Amino acid sequence: MELHTGHHLIYQLFGMNVNMDTLYMTWLTAAIVIIITLAATRGRSLVPSGIQNAVEIVVEALLAQFKETLGPKWGQVVSVLLTMFLFILVGNELGLLPSPHILTSPTNDLNTTLGLALVSSFMVHFVALRNQGLKKHVKHYFQPFAVFFVINLLEEFTKPITLAFRLFGNILAGEILMEVLYKLVPVGVPIIWLIFSLVIGLIQAFIFTILTTSYLADSLREE
Image (cartoon, rainbow, N blue to C red):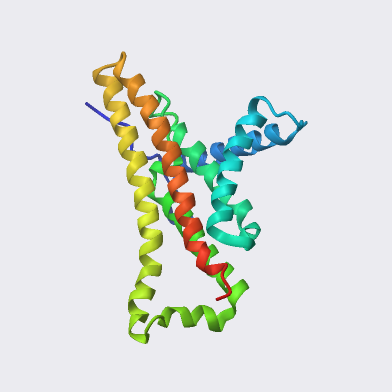
């Protein structure tokens, strides 16, 4: 039984291998996120309905988490965190359609998840430097004792790696199982797994965003 999930259409571009299917799906995901946000914010009413209501429910739930975790300076990063959540959520769900050779999740490619994780890591350091300055930011690597420097520095490398592999592994495994079920039991069982996978896609987007939020919490504290 031949599986398409996990295989990529590779082109040579400037001497580099580029997964073109991932690139196309990334653009499609970004376009869908833009359309959703425009549809939700265009012609807003005091009594929301339809897509505006759905988006507001999600955004308000996330904002409550951001405020609680990040404190009074949460507004500095909220737009990036919301964009990250919507992108990952839409990207996760695209691969659940029964067309693995046409539509796949951009997040089933480690290049995408690692890119998102590096953005998360960069944002943590950028926000820390902005709020605490270089001296305080460097100083925290030597706390609570100077001997902890190596461990604290190593943690900065493990955070993006674990973020990337957690999202990549869960999405790729789910899509592989979905394709197998469609081939072996095309009626009934795939629908049950599809519903389960929709929830998993939402949970994984939430986990990635909340972990990034927790990493940012220390960067937003002055002390």
